[in-house]
Length: 329
Image (cartoon, rainbow, N blue to C red; front, top):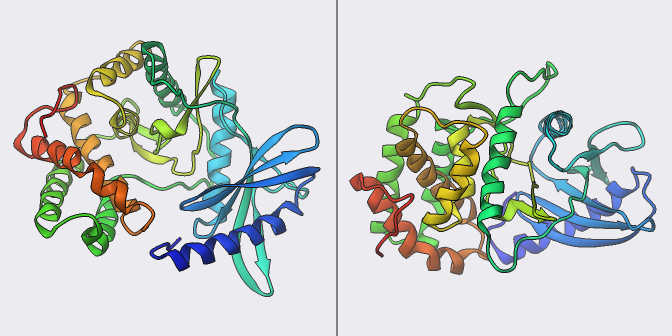
C-alpha cells in the first residue's frame, strides 16, 4: 500500500471505508457501529454489535488471499496448542476466511474479520512481572511452532536476507526524508554487516520456525496481568531471535534482561546467542525505519529517534555490546 503523500493517504482511506461497508455485507453480524482504527499495510476498523461484541475488520490491498488464509490457519492452530488468548478469524456466510471486495469491476482487495482481543497497554510503564510475562509469551509461541501439521497450500513470508535487502532498497529511495547522506552510509554499513552473517546461521527447530514477526510493544496488550499478542499480519518463517528482537527493542536495557529471563524460564537460549540477538535487534530497527520512511505522518518521529538509533548502530559496527548496556549519545 503506497502512502507517500497526504493525498494518497486520503485516497486509500476513502477506498478502505467503502471496502469495509461492502465486506460487512458478507458476515452475519448485527453491527451497530464501525470505527476507524488504523491505516498501515492494512486498514483496520473496529466493529461493535448489538450484542456488545467487538471485532476487527481488516482491509488488505496487497497481501494475497492465500497468505491471509494461512495466517488465520496458523492462529487456529495456536489457539489449540497454547493457553494464551490470541485473535482468531471469523468465517463469512460461505465458510470462507477471507472476502474478495469488488466495486464496478475494480478489485479493492480483500477483507478478513477477527475477534477483538480485550486488553490495554500499561499506562504507567511495564512492571517486572509484565516484562517477565512477555518473555514467557514469546517462548510459548515459539514452542508451539514445533511439530505442526500445515495444509499443503500454507504460505507465509520468509524474514531473512532477501526481505532485508528489499527493505534496504525501499530505504534507499526515501532515506532523505529523515537521514543525511552520511547518516545513510552508516545504515548501509550496518546492513552489510548483518547480511555478511545472516546466511551463515543454522536453521533448526531450536532457532528457526514460524514466528509472530512483529511482536513489538504495541502488539502486546494486557488483560488482568496476562500479556496477549495481537496483529499476526506479519507472521512467517524466521529466526526465533529475530522475533525476540522486536519485543526487546522498545524497552530499556535493564528491562530487556527481565524479558530474556522470562523467556529462558520456558525455553533455553543456546550457544553464543547474545551477538546474534544484537545483530537482529539492529536489523529490526532498520527494517522499522525502512517501513515508515515513505509515510509523511512518520517523518517527525523518525528524525526524533535518530540520535539513539545511530548510537546503537555505531556500537554495533564497533563491536561494543549495547543490548543490556546504557548507551551514550
